[in-house]
Image (cartoon, rainbow, N blue to C red; front, side, top):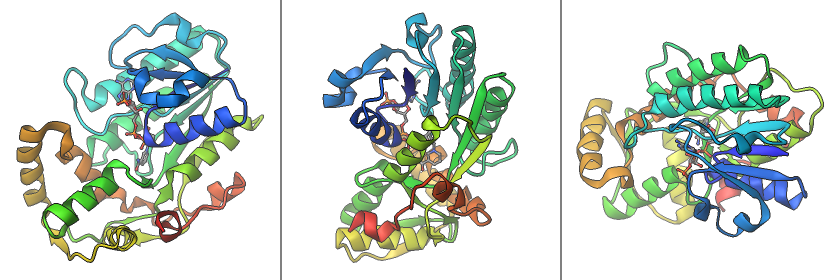
Length: 290
Ligand SMILES: NC(=O)c1ccc[n+]([C@@H]2O[C@H](COP(=O)([O-])OP(=O)(O)OC[C@H]3O[C@@H](n4cnc5c(N)ncnc54)[C@H](OP(=O)(O)O)[C@@H]3O)[C@@H](O)[C@H]2O)c1
């Protein structure tokens, strides 16, 4: 049995669809099972909030591998980024150890370092350490920017293009990513859990090195929207988002989410080699969005 956390997220949904299609028994740890849609009928469900201990013991029953995708890019009522990413991972690891789970696949992020500027990357670095020191057979997976049609970032780009008439670039728009399609990430996760021996670390990068400007331009082109891309100084974006998200809640990106887009230039030395070594040929952005 595989336990998948974050099954309602962009990668989780793609992964669970693949596992179910391959007839792998899956249990999804979710806060709200209705978000699984039709998949609900095809998986086991454990209802839990990783920010609210304790985890139900039944969640780990019969589980040999955990794929831990759940994460928070922003604070929410009652759960900070650190509470979900660090506290939630520590609790999940403890529950996995207590239940005799054999393997643990933890989704971190490229650029996770204790001194990184975005809180999420600092929290991921601490969570990586917890997983590494757990004694479980573990893989740390570090994706670059993950995208899919209709995901939060692409929706924001489209909303700005249609609502503002332009798309703000955070900073100069020169931060670089190796964007990887969520379904390619899911394919890699599916291959990983089928391996008998897990690698210690896997970097998940798409085939192209794109600046934020180039990525946004590719999204606008796929949407058929010709709109200017306007660089905006980070302090200004930060203030605007703090103000608008205090009014509109999570309909608007929080400064913590947007800050991640400034920092992902750390993938410059990474490549798609690990993705290809898992037997997945990652697609370029234009192909995915066309
Ligand atoms: N997207 C990227 O660009 C990117 C880049 C690098 C690394 N990653 C990592 O890759 C993984 C998958 O990313 P993603 O884009 O698929 O994430 P996502 O779409 O943001 O989904 C996050 C998932 O975590 C769940 N979650 C949040 N708080 C929770 C809590 N307190 N208890 C239980 N579940 C909780 C959410 O459940 P609800 O539906 O209930 O909210 C959702 O299923 C994450 O670990 C992420 O940090 C992503």
